[in-house]
Image (cartoon, rainbow over all chains, first blue to last red; front, side):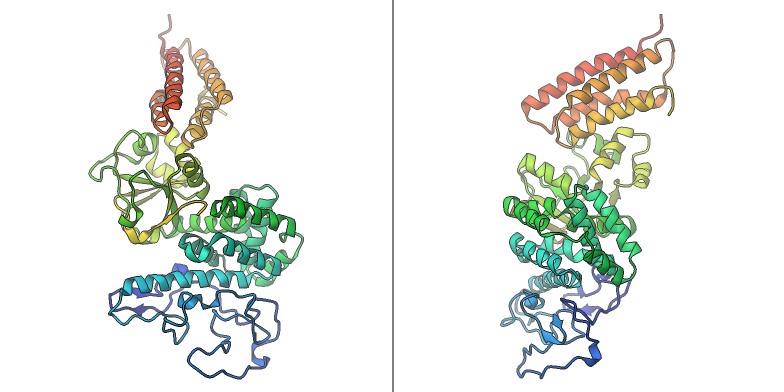
Length: 380
Length: 100
């Protein structure tokens, strides 16, 4: 994992220390938002524009999108997200941080800043996808699904960064496989193979440019599903996008405990107040909770790694889904989605193991702080 | 595959309970398969005084698992699941009959 410089804020929090959100691949100063192949050091430099908000492209700044040294606005929409979409009111001398003079609510400001970073990261992913139609597709998907107002989706896509150089290919492969009838899990396996196998960016590009890239009819189908089902349609139709992310989430949960999991909220649960178990003082086993949690008041909160599981229950119950960032959860977390976890926590309970396996279940013992919960209504 | 009938029994139980817990309702075909698997298991061990512990754990779990799943459904669904649970429990009891 790559350590990154951090900025200590007045309230004691750090910005930029969450290295898991930071791509570990080396900087890619060339070919941002396109196939410009001119070496950086031979590009004609545009004349700097005067004023505090110069549009002069800075090759070292990942938020700028250039083709052959020229600013490209159309293919890089919402490039101002590094100031949370508000370049007039937010002070952003380096393109990285909003202003907070201490008199306002700095927590909200910095939260918005982090959100902006995530969205910006999402667009960096889009830039990295060499196949232009795929890139356009993703932009369209975001536009239609309202990602700028949807932190969960933005975080999903930002997580694709973990796939390093293979993410472009991973997206193409995953989306194409989904479109060809593969399950998200199968697509995830393929995306994972590409992520780990395609260590060089060129091979990912080649994969994307091959016949496996998304043809227009399939792209249109995905767009139609978005139009019909909203974000839920994006999740289902664009499973290739999420397949990659879910795979990353699975790795996170196994390795570092940092990933996004999902929970269909009970009636009366308010994500703004955080989440709590039915009985924090109970002492049931993990197996008992999995087997009979609906009947008992236990100390656990059930979540799932699989957005499709949550979507099914949300469709049945009509209740909203909350996305929980496990990296921000202080309570103990039990990953029952893996064979190792099932063996460790559900030994001797084959039915509980089958339940946990089918739901990719993760238990949280105790409260979940409000900051770790993002409410998300399917179709919103 | 072991020949004591435990694995088919477990597979049949899973095929009923997992979809039920995933909100997909009762699968009649899977339910018929589970009833057949229970009968087959009971026949296989009919002359024995003991059955495998793993099998005992599975069949003993059927009723509470179904009862727990019933809470996930509306009243009609819950009633149906409980009736099925009662029916399966009667079948399971055959597995524990003492040999004559």
